[in-house]
Amino acid sequence: MTDLDELLTWRESSGSGAAITAALDSLDEVPAVARDVLGAAERIVVTGAGSSYYLAQAVAAVARTSLARPVLAAPLSELILRPDGVLVGGRGGAASSRHEPVVIISRSGSTSEAVTVAERMRAAGHPTVAVTCRGQSPLAALTGVTLVSPAGDEAAIVMTRSFASMLALLLGVIARVGGDDGLLSDLRRLPGRWDEATAAARVGRRLGATDWSRVIILGGGPAIGIAAEWGLKLTETSQVPTSAYEPLEFRHGPISVCEPGVLVVGIVGGAGFAEEVAVVEETARLGATTWLIARDEDEARGTAGEVSLIGGGLHPSARLPLLLHPGHALALSLALTRGRDPDAPRHLGQVVILDAE
Image 1: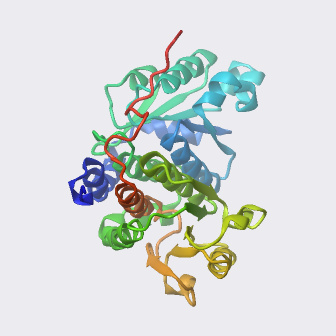
Image 2: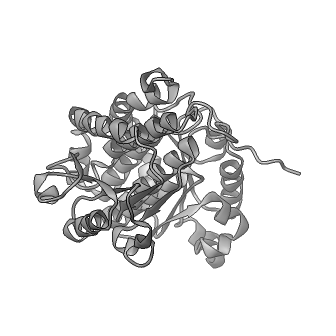
């Protein structure tokens, strides 16, 4: 049986700490025009596909608070198929479009939907910002501003360090535009906290040695995007039935799946943690195995099951890039347990190119 350490995907995930550091170091090189575009916005749309869409969800949630204006996350496909359901500016003409920038996230910068959205948004007069790991990509050539994660690119099919590093980069830009000095300062502290992510990843490796019948990931606020990304990684690498929910929403029906053999992961931290921890504890009483990822001992006090602490003392949003690596550990370990090859997930390629016909 293949060992986790032999996997390309795991080695690249394990390099996320260095990629996060490089992304934060690059903040001083972000063009002033990028900050100007976002700073002048009346409304911002952040978009991507797959993992990049979940990244957009996390970024939009943070930006709504830091920038104090409407920020919407939407899949690329909605901007192509149903743009009037996403955009406001286009209905008000070119003048209003200029105040509704579209931030397009794509690791490769070659995904068909990302390129199409860039072309259409530019034609409609919306400022565009590309966030990618490949600065010489088709997407970068089409957008007004490009933000590049300098060490985020990877050869693995599924996204790992690219997600964490592009997330750190975007959070840093948002913090600067919004004058959120607390968030920016705590993002700068992330390189010194990477060991917390690796400690939690050891728990993920161990839990992945069990072939769970189902995995549930819970996360609220910006963490819903992280929870959804954990769910995607579990689904695409191991094909285990996986769902992601906002914790209190899980109480409204889906909690009926709890039973022995089900793993529930709760990603909590900051406002509302007590209510969210209570949901995780309830799933344990219903027979599920639980893993709580909190910021500190106060948030996790009295919790049964596995507990990992990540980001104690940090701004709740600053810790987000540290939360991906433990999920990769769980997903890749479980994939090996189920006899899958996470480096070659079935039916998948690294870049989605849609047939024009």
